[in-house]
Image (tube, rainbow, N blue to C red; front, side, top):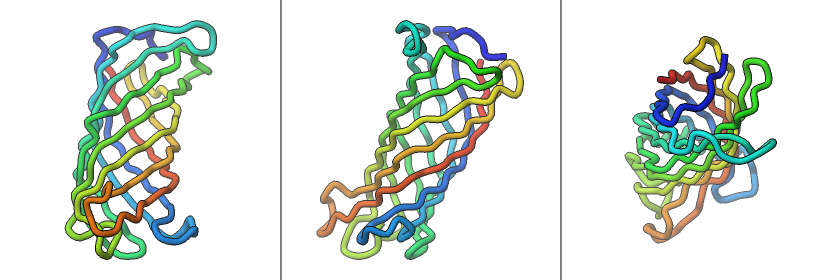
Length: 175
């Protein structure tokens, strides 16, 4: 099922994600954020490394047309992540292939996020990993778990940040 990396391979995916975390207190259930988006990526290094580190590097970006905080207050918005770096392992376990990734970008919302004297413009950072479950030769189901951070980087009077765990599910098409 999984194919050897090709330097000209492109990747298109749709995804949804939910995160739970803290903003002002140390309660991990304090805030909840839901988002959905589209990912577009390109393999920039087809094969590198040896042994368990062998894999390929992919660059991509996320367009996030839907982002909502449902707890403690409903806040709606959207954003983009112009930097998504993903290390796709060359090792396959049946139809499963693991990966790790780092991403960063920005969110814009209809009111201050988190609520209060903060900012409607925030920066994002994510780090984590996932697995691709190949369903067809050039398609896979993507399941990931990541650390997620949202902060206004002191653009507002206050800068409380959202730190949480994000779970996502997506579907990918490879070309």
